[in-house]
Image 1 (cartoon, rainbow, N blue to C red):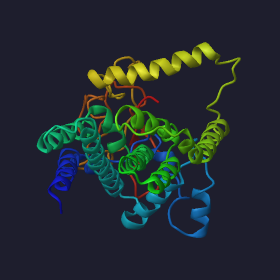
Image 2: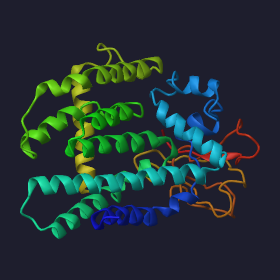
Image 3: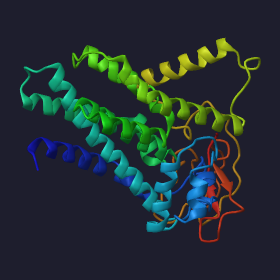
Amino acid sequence: MRRENRWGLAVAAAIFIVLLPVLGHEFVSWDDDGFLTRNPDFRGLGPAQLGWMFTTFLKGPYQPLVWLSYAADFLLWGMDPAGFHLTGLLWHCANAALLFLCARELLRAAMPGVPEKHVLWAAAFAALSFALHPLRVEPAAWASARRDLMSGFFCLAALLCHLKGRGGWTFACYCLSLLCKPMGIGLPVVFLVMDKVILKREIRWQKLLPYALPAAIAAALAWHGQAVTGATRSAAVFGPAQRLAQAFYAHAFYIAKTFWPAGLSPCASTRWRRASCSAPSSAWPPPGRPSPCAGACPPSGPPGSAPSSCSPRCWARSSSAPSSWPTATPTCPG
């Protein structure tokens, strides 16, 4: 193995060690219940399951490749959350390694006179800073957010292929990213900007044409998924000014939290009303498993008793959960 590629493996290993505690976490009732624990449709790779994966808009997103990965998890681990979290963690580590490779190629192109040792250190710093940032904790530790990890993986793979001049692989990875989440729709525009500003390549607008069809299909599927789940609003209800404000807030939020990542835990947020909690089952959290709402519900009695106050709905019974799972699952405001 080439020395520079060992750096990528070292970055991935460091991420794995730091985030290893996620393997001890349970499923949570933010989407994990609707997507996974109460959903039998993805459990297997038979014709019925495959047909469902490629046609469903459950909770809005069209994500057939993500459902395939969940099915593989089920076949490997059953419904053990540790297995699902392990797969998510491995995707996150792979993304960190890919980001290192992309940063290395960009730095080589942008600063050809810089010693290779400095390039490798800078690329490793960029990858570690990204992968260990608190904003990355959610997709790495939340089973239902795997679409972010998988879409990010294929977007980074497409970027790396583009940097190396492999057009066919770039297009294939781009299409695969859209089958996980449509957040990479604008990636071809990023390619053109990079070609002009960093790589100093000749700009050919016709290169965008092959990407137009998958981008249009992904956009239509995304809109349809939101429409069928009731997540869209008409212009009369939510007008242009509100939409512009929402877009501005989303960008401002992530920019601000990148530099000051405080107040990111919804369970511990003090902006929500405090409320009494219903008594949880003594089976939750299981022995040795931390509650996803740890710190949000301070105990006020013996172990297993309900906290006197906490974030709204921090404990909620799950009456339809199979008997092999905990009879209570933690939830927080959604």
